[in-house]
Amino acid sequence: MNQTRRIAALTAVVLFGALLATACGGSNDDDGNGSENGDGTAPEYLGAVIAPPPSMPEAILLDENGEEFDLQEETDGYVTLLYVGYTHCPDICPTHLHEIDVALRQLDEDVASKVKVIMATADPERDTPEQLKQYLDSFNESFVGLTGPRELMDQFQVALGLQPATRTDIGNGNYTVNHAAYVMAFTPDDRLAHLVYPSGMGMREWLNDLPLLVEKGYDPE
Amino acid sequence: MKRFRARFGLMLALVAVLAIPLAVACGGDDDDDDGGDPTPTEMADGDAVTVGDLTITGGWVRTTTNDVSAAYMMVKNDGLEDTLVAAASPISPMVQLHEVITEGSSSKMQQKEGGFTVPAQGMVELKPGGYHIMLMNLTEPLEEGDEVEVTVTFEKAGEVTLTLPVQKAEGTSMDMDSGHGGMGSETPTMGGN
Image: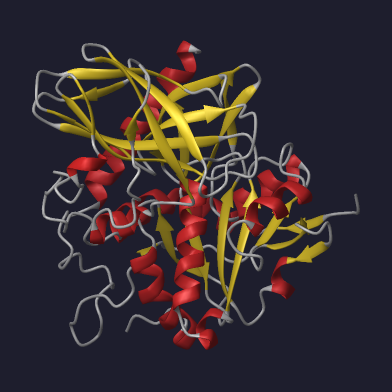
């Protein structure tokens, strides 16, 4: 392991920790940042609010069938759950995908059919359309996988407000990929992701938020 | 490959990059409402494997369509502090102890230096989004219903081999909300040492 990298990582963790500490009151009912309803009841959305919300990028990428996928066009009219992950990810990615799948199966068909789930790869060198298809089909055959040249996938992540994925070499030709820490939920009316769902959020959040997002988009007031 | 085209709102993206760590940090509302009850009381005694003062329960390995997977379990300690220092499996020539770290909008897995500490009279849980045993260069894909042998080595208690079921997931939120429901009766069992 590379010493400089470790120090850099540590610094980043510390910095992020500081951000967390400054940004959060720790309590869940008096943050006064607009997450309450107009009538003073508890927040109805369980996802994490991001501001300003990233907008759905205009991009044409390659889908899991090897076809061109025009992101704006294909997600028109849907609540889009967009996640940047990779198939050789054994931990967070499959947890998100599995929980989304289970939630969609539990929700009413008229809600579930209005949700599009997309995993764009942070590891385009390994994630060919075939790899993506095989992987995503093991969760839900309707899940879309997107890939493209590294440079484009990096730009795509930046456009989403993410740090472009980097690799961590873990020996014997293996590497892990540092990727998006959350699933983003784009609403159909404004094409913005007001809410994101980091690791640790899952079934409970999807079952609560997806019907709301389908019915009225993001409208907390 | 066909042509690709992309036009991104770079200014917006830049603003978003700066804003996201703050926003994300504050959104989750009640992650700690499981009442500080980490004791795996819902595990039947029959599911447990003991080695020295340690009791291991709730182990499982994730299904995969490629050559990478992860193993999870809970280790409870009735004695002095110990450390899970190594793991091995016949299905993987390369096994590492990993942790997940989130920095801003990015998550990464990396080797956990020194292994996983099991506090005295406490417990450590290997679970999605936290610690896991990373199994790489698998010789074959893992399907639901398969079983995988994983040998874990502790600094003080020594080593023990577990036979773990292959499952699609034990979702983190289900874990939080309703305990360990569907662990299967054969989880884990003592193997050769």
